[in-house]
Image (tube, rainbow, N blue to C red):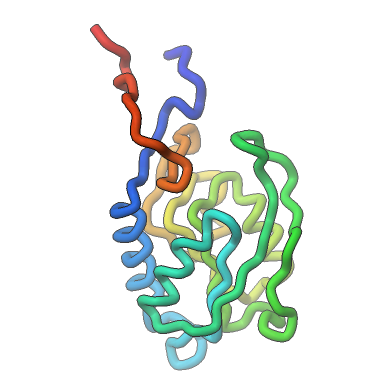
Length: 167
């Protein structure tokens, strides 16, 4: 088909687009919490989940915000995920009433690990790839598995060659 590297099939997300998609995620989650539709807290998976978690927390008026840090990538190389910072244990319990947010579910390994710790939490991502979809309860946009998503915090403005090259 083509000799392009996997990351060259890129989906570039601007700050504006991320904000719109995170707000759409909040609207999808509104009223879906177990406590008369409310969520007890929101936990962002660092680093990518922090920005959408903040937007969702603002939209849904969630004041209790924490984070879980899971390292599963080194640049663009995936490795087995491990928790390097956990949220407050007394807040989390089994995850009941907790909304866990990440920017993307790719292979699903990160969410699989976090779900094993908090099985009753609700897992939401802005973007999803097919291999990881079963690990996420709510998402906004699905992209193909071979698409690399470029988030605004990873980009600088520069020329990009057209996908099919030039003629």
